[in-house]
View 1 (tube, rainbow, N blue to C red):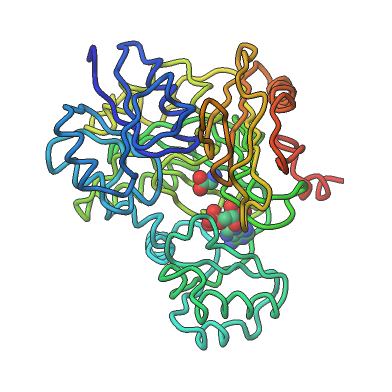
View 2 (cartoon, helix red, strand yellow):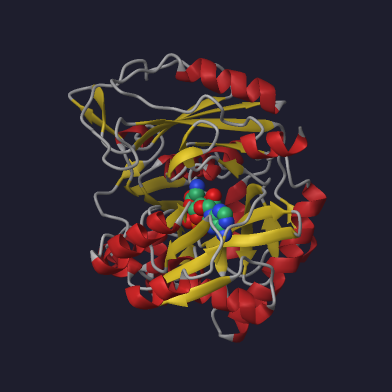
Length: 433
Ligand code: AMP
Ligand code: GLY
C-alpha cells in the first residue's frame, strides 16, 4: 500500500529499530511514533501521547487516518490497546488484552503450559506471604521467585538460599515493593542451560520465525548481579539451530495458538518464547506478547525482506500459507551492546550530557536511542538503558568487534556496559571444560 500511515507505539531502542525497519519499507510509508524520543526524529513524526493512554492513541489515530499500528511495549499490549484499535477498524500488530495475559500474568501462562502439557519449570503459586514461606520448606536452592504481574523487568528473583527467598517474599508480598504485580507469586524450579529468545510473528494460526536471539539479562559480566531489561543481545544465537528453532516453535506455538483460537482470542502479533535449552530439552521460561528489547535491535537489522507486508498480513490474519513455519528472510549476524546509565537497574541517574553520538557511523552500525533526550541541541541521558549500539556483519565475531568499536566513541559519565555480549556464556564454558 503506497503511502501507508503507520504508527509505532513506544519510546525505547526496540521502537527505534521498528521505526527504522518500517521507514525503510518498499512502499515508503509515513511513520509516526507515540511518544518516541528525539533520536527517532529523522525517521518518524513524534506524537506526544504515552503508550498506555489507549483512548488518546485511538482518538489520534482515527483523526489522523492511521492505517496500521505496531505496538512495542508490554504495558500498552496489556492495557488492551490492540482491542480498542481493532474495535474502530484500525489494523494493529499486537494481541488483545486476553492474549497479552501470556505475558501480563505469569500464573495464567504457567497454567496454560501445564494444561497443554508443554515443557516448563515445575512451579507452585502462592497468594499470601505465609503460603509462600510455607512452600519454601524442603526446596533445593537456588529457587526462582516470580511476581505474577508486569513488573518492568524486576519481577524475577533467583534466590541462592532461604534468607534471600524470605527477604524477597517479604519485600514483594508484605512491603508491596512491586505493587499489585507481587501480590501473587510463583515459586519455580531453577533451570540450567542456555537461554534463547525466539520471536514468532503470528497471524493467529500461521506463524513465521525471526532468527533466534540471545539476550544478556544480568547487569554484570559473566551473567552476574541483578536482572535488567537486557544489557545486550546477538542474533542468530549460537543455539538453537534454525531447524531446532522451527521444531521448538511447532511444539510450543501451535498448541498455544490453538488454545487462544478456541477462546476466540486469535493471537495476532509477536509471540516471544523465552526458552531455556536444558539437558532435558527446551523448556519455556516465559512468554512475552511483543518484540523483546534489545532482541528487536538485533533481529530487525538482519532482515533481507520487507517486514511491513508480513506485519500487515499477520495483523489481518492472513500470513501466506506457504510461509507458515518458515523464517523471515535474513542474512548475517548482529550484536547490540546496551549503554546504561550509572545506577541502572536499581536507581539509574539521568540528565548527563552524552558525547560522540552524532556519527557518522560505519556501514552496518545502528545506534538505537532509548533513554535519550535532547536539550538545546545537546543529547542527554533520560533513562536506565540509554543507547543500543548495534552492528551487523557477515559473522558474529565481526559484528561484535564493530559494535564495540562504535560504542567506544560514545561517552557519558558513569556509562556502564558489558564487555562480554555475544560471547559463550560462562556456564556452558565451564560445563564443556
Ligand atoms: P523472565 O522475566 O521470566 O524472563 O525471567 C527473567 C530471567 O530470569 C530469565 O531470562 C532467566 O534468565 C531467569 N529465569 C527465569 N525463570 C528461570 C528458571 N526457572 N530457571 C532459571 N532461570 C530463570
Ligand atoms: N529482553 C527481554 C525482554 O524484552 O523482555
